[in-house]
Image 1 (spheres, helix red, strand yellow):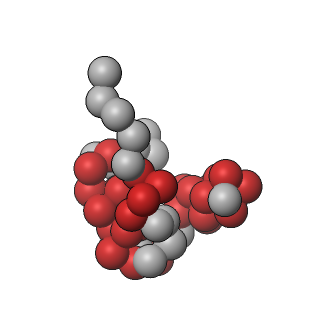
Image 2: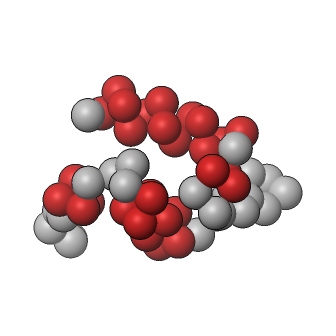
Length: 54
């Protein structure tokens, strides 16, 4: 799963519109928006994002 997710995130660096997000001039986006879009698009399982907060 880690390799698949890594490749998916690399793809989004060049084609963020694939899941409906935009990057700023420095290539950043809001993390919450990124994760929500990934889950909504079906590319990241919801359970993958469940981890304890500090």
